[in-house]
Length: 109
Image 1: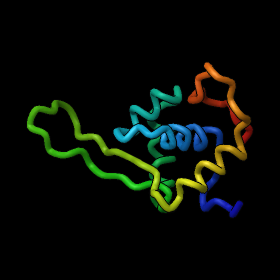
Image 2: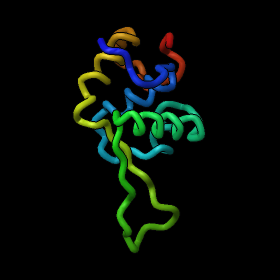
Image 3: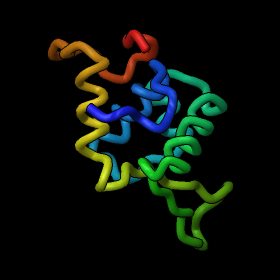
Image 4: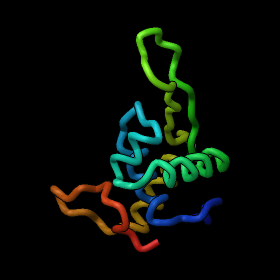
């Protein structure tokens, strides 16, 4: 596996796992809640992954019915899906069925 252009921490692996989940409506707060980490630690990871072109993002459309701030949605770039899967598989042991795969701190980064 080639070297990643970013630091791979347990939190980074948590974020990658959520991005690999197939959910197409992922924004930083939703990701943070899924992995049990503060949004203030997730957003910088997403920004770093986006700078390295592993992640793309777009702002939520202007829906007149929406209340509150617009959300920025994130997804893995198709060119890096395989590398993200390989990285998570390499750094995380296989999980048993029924175990929450988004629990923080399960990886040795």
